[in-house]
Image (tube, rainbow, N blue to C red):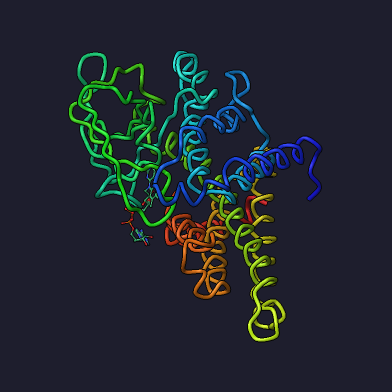
Length: 378
Ligand SMILES: Cc1cc2nc3c(=O)[nH]c(=O)nc-3n(C[C@H](O)[C@H](O)[C@H](O)COP(=O)(O)OP(=O)(O)OC[C@H]3O[C@@H](n4cnc5c(N)ncnc54)[C@H](O)[C@@H]3O)c2cc1C
């Protein structure tokens, strides 16, 4: 794939930024389970928090390839920081696409500039893969709703200013923008998660939170099928590219380590079985990037296959990242099991890629349906 000068420019700038400003802090972010405010500020200054959002409201409106390449570079440096880009852009994109004029005017300038952070609040303690089973209730009262329920695993929920909350009104799903400072809303950090440990996840409890009707995104009934799905589609695209970043990070770490480390009179890279692992990693990165590029090109042209090809890219890249990161730990031997090298973090972060925005199993089920539809979409 030949990049345009603009796309190569975004990639190179993100590569420099990630290497200088994020990668040196990645282990600290993982250890301390927090992304420093200075990193958030740097992401904001670079325009990455509004990268996918419309230029009309101050966003970067990057084309999908450029956005993917930026995500890959940030994801290679630190999956926790990449996850901020993912959730903020996915929730704000849903607002940009399906919010009304007043909602766009009110929230998008702040979100595009990264002055406010929006989190995506769908999952609950009892409802993950089965999104239609969410138990959060929105009861119509006057010109708005009283919302009650508990959301869990909400990435960057600890610092978000706004939450895109999904609830049922009667039996119809609704999407609502809820202010963090609303009466009745409590944010509790979720700590000691396995991967993306710096993504500051939270449990968000809503006890009769009053939400004006003007905060409802899309019509009643469209909360899951349109609003959540649009956001999740963007999220999958971002996680797919973030996973290619993990694979590239593993390959770089292994090339460096196996090229230096000697056992007896040979360096590790001279063993055929070690070389085979390196080859598999190289192929995995090339293949994962190829499906991501394909998805980006289809998104660029508004092709009807784009949503499912994005799901395919996410499934493939996340699965490859887990496999490669596991091999990367093995190639580092005992050192791979320590925090002296980044590969253990890559493995933990890659595991999360197989769970968020739809688990592997959910993708395995839905992509089989696509296998039947695909011939008709070509
Ligand atoms: C680090 C992290 C960050 C997250 N961030 C967010 C966020 O910002 N916002 C948000 O809303 N959520 C977030 N989540 C939640 C995430 O979306 C859910 O964890 C995910 O959807 C899976 O739901 P679950 O954990 O309840 O697992 P379950 O749905 O209980 O699934 C458990 C297992 O059963 C399998 N399974 C379930 N249903 C089926 C089926 N129909 N067919 C086959 N297998 C099935 C799953 O694949 C999985 O292997 C985050 C999760 C993590 C770990």
